[in-house]
Length: 213
Image (cartoon, rainbow, N blue to C red; front, side):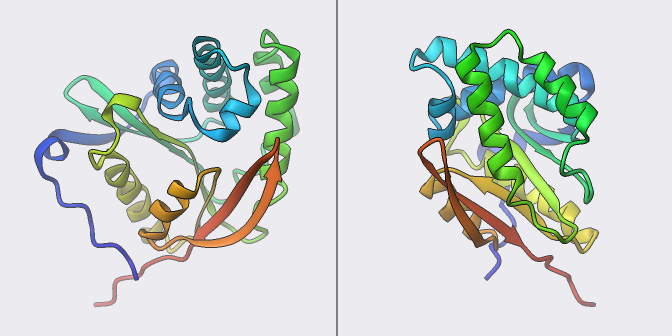
């Protein structure tokens, strides 16, 4: 059963989703790092020190947003960015070889272990990409101190509205059980599981909801 649209109350009534400009990608990377700093995959990729992990994540996600050139929805309250949802149209996965090389060069300053872990993670998740056309979602995160206010739901609704208009299939990966339950409320179903870097990951897809006249 599909979850009904999020009702805009309180802070959500003031939050406006809009596409980010390329110049805003570094800020988006900072928000993603803040929101995902304790995710199991990120803890496995980076060293335990939280400050160093945040720094490494900003570099990784900044390079990822830049090289994938994915459209990125931002949830804004006035001039403050609270959440980010990057996505790609069908055919945007896998990343072309030249882009993968540029991405590797962009993260060359990170510790060797982090680079190896990052590439192992991307390779594992990439191997599970569906063969049929799909809209990949991610990275998707809400700033740490803005979570549990409905902002992620608001962003996800905006993404799914776009996908449904195109009668497309949405697809994502996640590394926490809590996220699995969250996405299931929006109609996503589990389509696979795997382990990478010692972390169990779940792969999910959602068929379009088409309104009939």
